Amino acid sequence: MAASHHSRNEQLEEIRTKLDDYDYLRIVMCDIHGISRGKLLPARNAIKFLRKGMGAFVGLDYINPRAIELQEIKDSTKIEVIKSGGNLVFDPVLDSFRSAPWAGHDKYKVAEVISEMRWTDQSPDITCPRFIARKQLNRLTEMGYSLLSGIEMEVKIFNAKDNTPIFPGEDFYSTLLISEHMELFARTEKRLKEGGVNLEDVHVEPSPGQFEINYQPVWGILGGDWPFLIREALKETALEFDYIANFMGMPTPNEGGTGAHFNHSVWDKNGKKNIFYDPTKKDNVSDFARHWTAGLLKNMNAITAFFCPTVNCYRRMHAVWGPSVEAWGIDDRYSSFRIKNFGPTSTYVENRTPSGLANPYLVMAAVIAAGLDGVESKAELPPQRKDAPTREVINNLEEALQALEASSVMKKALGEDFIEWFCMIKRSGEIKKLVNSNMKDNNNPQAYKDENELYAKFC
Image (cartoon, rainbow, N blue to C red; front, side, top):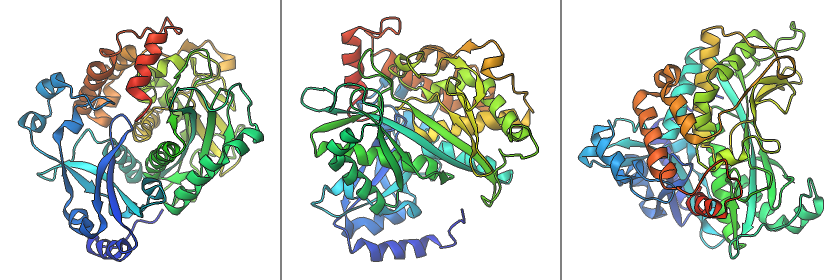
């Protein structure tokens, strides 16, 4: 919880001594699609770029998941510096420096540092997901609060050669299947531990080739950093087994979907008191938590664009265990927002809507923006799902984008330019490209083929 008191020069000196143990440094960023992009450089050259940043092609701001440049965004966006063709800069976050053994594949010693993107004039790149999340975390900090969060990361593992799941059937919680694939997860876990990421458990989910990974809940921006790093480590380690770690919401028809439930609670600034917990209430859920959850429901249509940001995500909606209604409930897994009230340290909101391909930084940002809207307006929480009529969750990306564009709350919190740019990226780079996709036809093989080609390998 405590902020580092080290100066930037002191941090650089600490890193300089550590770099002697490495062959390479990787400078990475999480793009709008949740994809890790960056540069690899010899460790001997690293300090110069850690100090001043590293230039990057401006096209990173107008590509789809397969890095196809979207000319209409380049030509029409309000972000003037993109039109002028100026450079982006990887701006390293020095306290994110860590070992990244998954990048070296046991052959090279690789360190990694996460960056936020900025322009050469030092101004922030407003499209950077980590920057967007930090802005919302700063709002909480200014109010005297902090955020504790963790994501239940579901994933399907496929054989790269024929795109078949690495096991058939739905053997939920099978220890035999964990044992059979122990090497993949043990190698990933040990590498993440070396990188400072603490996995807590892995289990088999009820769909062919599907697992769930859980990690220790973390404070603040680490709630975006850790799932980003876990996805990076698992995808890169899977390559060593000739596997693809696929986080798509529904990569194949008629099977269980892949989600990324965002569990979170708001605490005091020192992380000592859970603001969601109130022992004087019958259900132990505080008024703050009720207003917060009401804000999530109030803004549900708009924030679904961040929770389910791809065309494919919506194939998971309304399926088995998928989110189907805008509702909340105490320990109710059929609701979009499930409040768990297990005591002063374990009272939190489980946001069940996010798909496996949701960008963790943008999920965090949207949740804070919507939650604070509920708190600030003292929004009233409606009756629980079991006690009231419900409305279906929005069911395709275009409708979600339209709701986002119409949201004054999201525009004010996240920025109008960012919202405009995000919607253009999604329409131009994904919706228009996936012409065979139709959410009313969940068995169209060409649609799944096209979606896998766009999302599966890199996202």
